[in-house]
Length: 308
Image (cartoon, rainbow, N blue to C red; front, side, top):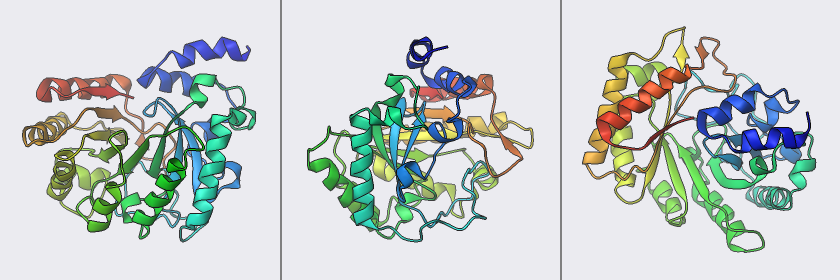
């Protein structure tokens, strides 16, 4: 089978179908191209990943090389038993790595890399640059400075404009340094906030957030009244059990309440744990179950919900 045999079926797919076709492919780079390798070009802070939610290739900016996070999610793929490669950001190195990676992607040179060689061209086009990493990015002590660095790379205009996406659990959206950093976002940039359930008991089981769900919801509303916020919700199978139906009802109710209070929510992303997790009890929820959750969200809230 040659490259053109693979390109059209995968490039034409989206959402869960894209995930299915990607994961079904026998490809030597599965753990790299479709995971989150942190060693692309031997980088310290910049990585590349292909995912259905990004609808292709995204460049990740690891704001937490020290693995600092205030959630302890059951489905987390980060191995906290291993010491971090870096303990702090070097913004000069970050800028250089981002610039170099952007060049690799925009010139098509990335297709020559063994991680990505032979993949469809459509999957190797840059969709966004994610502020994310091995922890909670808004807890980065250099959050504002890191955003300034990334925005400066974009503003130089040497390469095509790229969209920024902050991936966050929402717990620090009310903090002054985070609000200051988000002032650098344009209307084209996005914030994706995690909400994995509708009750404190369920979040304590899945996320171990160490804070009340009301705090997370209040922070989502705080930001979503000012600018659109994408809700990203991961529903795993834990110990062979699906999320209870009553939990999904409460989750949909929380979304309905946010919308009624003035939250701008253009999209709710419903997905599951597609990559290997550190917790052996955690696994992927069946597509039919994810679809049922999305249907509940649409019916109860009127929001757009997509399954990935």
